[in-house]
Image 1: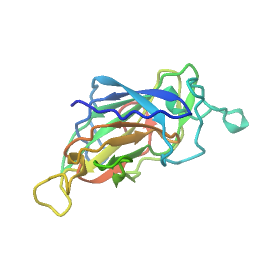
Image 2: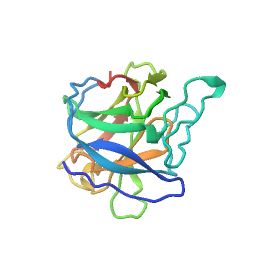
Image 3: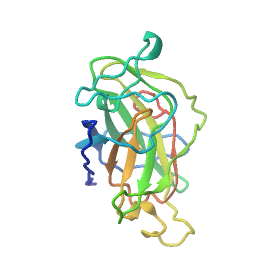
Image 4: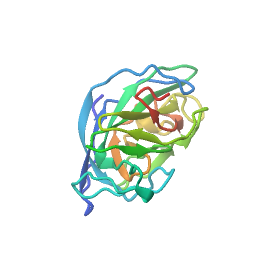
Length: 218
């Protein structure tokens, strides 16, 4: 699937993330992740709400250096330290999903904690207002800090229902994935958002799970 990327210049500087073609599935927090091809994407510091789960780190414009954690511990990852790849999963019972894989591309260790941000925006407006926001679901997964050495990854499941609101045939009115907007993904505790085409079957019940170590989402 080809992806449109939304570009926006800010005084905070331009950050880079990688994004993979979307698609695939997951069911009830389980997935058979498979490697996908990645695309280059320009990502900017967004003023919109990102995911929470601790104090947000701040990226230095163009520098990619994480802020120092309080007490001298490992600092939280910034968006400029992370690449994002979206792997396919498996499907079942009307649900499907993907695995969001965040990799530390920096030269120092950093940490991720909590839930990524995810939403699907509507088409037809300058600000692309959200039509569907992901609900945070633990799925029995403990929320804990994941330390990423340079080159290592953490991941989180993203799931949704393929059944449109009110049933019937899926269309742009009852299935946001078909509306021509964007899927927005924000790494935990950052404001660095990547926007790309949502899967067309992303209709209802969007859910995101906490980050865990490794690339499987589990």
